[in-house]
Image (tube, rainbow over all chains, first blue to last red):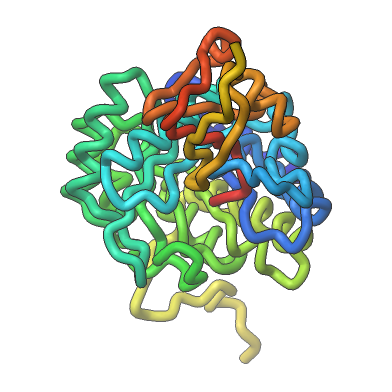
Length: 264
Length: 71
């Protein structure tokens, strides 16, 4: 895809594991499972997220995601989506770990139903418990630096500030805040939620963050496989642009062509 | 000695099954693969090796969960 790049990247490592792709994709909201499977392959992602829910005992279909996501090919990152208290999130995290794949958890503790913004107090308290229990916690949070610092102090394996609210597709609303979090923290920063299209992903990666997690932008695209491909390129392009060092912004024009040698 | 069915709560719904089943047999009753399901009994996770030795008791609250699509 990206051939003969001279810029050297560092490995994308979270909680002691290294991944090739900096794009993490979800498994929700696809129109059908075949589309999801094709989109996952097109995205080039190594990590896919899953949710923990009750088994449908009156099954009319095989609704378990493991019928459609091969755990030998993808690293499964379980989430605590839908949890509104630390207690609930801890319960879901323990159930997810018991499924037997890994000790990673994408920790979400929601504080508001309309915006799905995180409850940072509950998030911090759940983080403390889960870290003590040996989880690798990837904490979904807002783009607030101080919260991000507290999450790092609490032992998170990665901090995941939002670009904009979950499922909104509004793109990166506060590049400065995300960049600041990246500058100040040592753990990986993975922007989670809000990316709407490829330019959003590219702009996000240009801030220097380590990766992006997205679901709706791909799942709800008219052509999910096409968008997954676009996101793959966008994440690579944004990363490469960041590593390559952009030119300075100037308030004045500077000609690109020689100003000498003009015809008399 | 035969006893009547026992009542318990499964994934939030009242259910009845014959007495004397283990949690593994509960999964088999619903044709669930124990490798793909996590069992919680009265808010405590029952690990897979223990399913065959853990009886389903009257009044139990059982949750059967698995991974579904999510972001």
